[in-house]
Length: 168
Image (cartoon, rainbow, N blue to C red; front, side, top):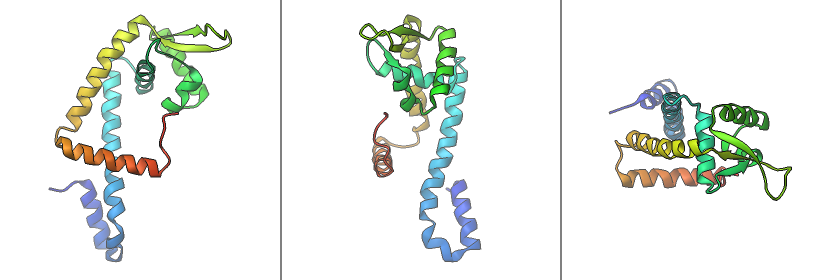
């Protein structure tokens, strides 16, 4: 069995046999990149089927996992959403118009505004995340749990080495 990366490696082997010993990183990173494209396609379809955008789903999940009262400042959402402050404001505006979030003043400091899930979106997010987990599991179905654990540990090591150790 072979995949597109094997074909790429084969082409480089033909064209530059002197590089064959150094091609092993391509075998890893090209597959990560290709899997990211597949995952992105699935996530976009998952969100679109629910009349949402990927970024909106990300904010719903971020707020839900933050725990009651399911509210964070826009600034706290930026690192988790990996977008600029302008982009987060626009996203929140769209979500507010859909009734998914509401802006609430902080009880301690009225200058602070928190973005909070609405009652409607709490229930939506619960079922959405369960569907999301099922989709992830389906994508990983060709692998056994031990292989998944090995891959997760290897990717964790790479992320830590690259400095990606926190969602903030």
